[in-house]
Image 1 (cartoon, helix red, strand yellow):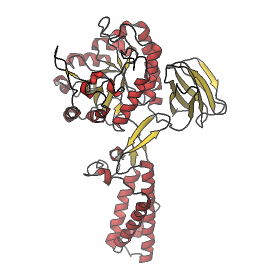
Image 2 (spheres, rainbow, N blue to C red):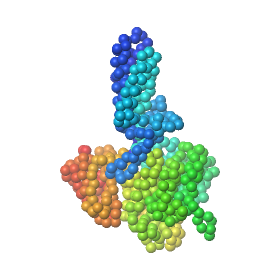
Image 3 (cartoon, rainbow, N blue to C red):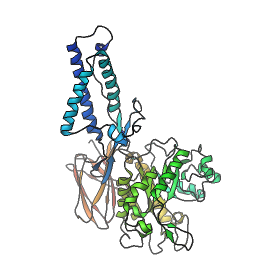
Length: 517
């Protein structure tokens, strides 16, 4: 989803009335200024409704996507064509100086006082010209504004591709020697390189056409002009208790202040690429013992995310060893939802996906569970996926996914599905076009609605390990249209703008509804 530009305003005014030649009588001058005042009031009123800016951040519930978006002063981005572009945050108190429109009685007093001040100023020719100049600056600035309603990082000169057909699908800490095999499975990004990057590692990835987010070490900085590097790796799970050395136990997590300082250092060395920070399972589960002394302290995370541009996290519920989490795939979606709320609109959220035994030799995710975790993540707002493909038990395998033909085929199919739908996933969501009901309150259905080209796309997932039947209705579902259930070889007619479908435990359905909206 990309920022949607606000339509510019055109004022049908005769500027010749302000020429330096014979002045119009004061009555005509006053009428002209009254026209400007009304236009200014209209601009300020409409801008306040569109941008919803105030002196404090506001919270907006986007119905259907089950996610929170925070709008604040810094989230307003002026058009690059505006004369005020680039100055949004230069004021020492930009939260009060940028776009604040008082409400209620204060607003009426504001309008009245501004009008009185305006007419006092135009009693002279200089005041009139100054007023006109102010309006010519403010009107384009206000109407050239854009509200960033989504996360995709388009501002990075050397970052991941901003093309609508690209969606980040990564593997964690893998050997470049396997890049070709991962690429064949639909992977388009490496995150992390063991004891790297080295010049040799980067050369192998470049030859394979595989991008990487890696540490900013000496070799990395020497390769700043290498397009294979699309981001910098900040660190892994600094929010967890940190080892004090072999046999010495664990100390507290790394302080958020240290993470922010390191982030500023990385950005200073190369501001053209985003910085990724991967956090632990405390993002989704407060009671995680691995956080040590910061267990049950979720208030740390809004501070941690200040130290990155891309915030990621990992939790692997299928192989989890604690009954509070084990087998409950919804913890993946919960982590994405919480991290998006903490990250706000200025940062992108990714997350990790399990697909091996990891450290549980007794069980691993099925292909259906992996697909459920992937689509739960996407529906709840994740903008990038990282497969964790290591196995530690019963034996260590760095690339365990590549040694599992069934899972490798399933992951490749999921990745193909995502790549085919990337233009749809990167398009704006429709947040109030339908209503969704589950026949069993125990099993809610999460959904995402998109409109792309000539079709409506509805992505839905059962959020519990319990079957249910979902009912969908709304103006975005054209009566008499044909709905294709993607990947399931079945279609059906949408009657009277509504339909129903069965969902098994944690089942995903992807609907493409063709027909005129």
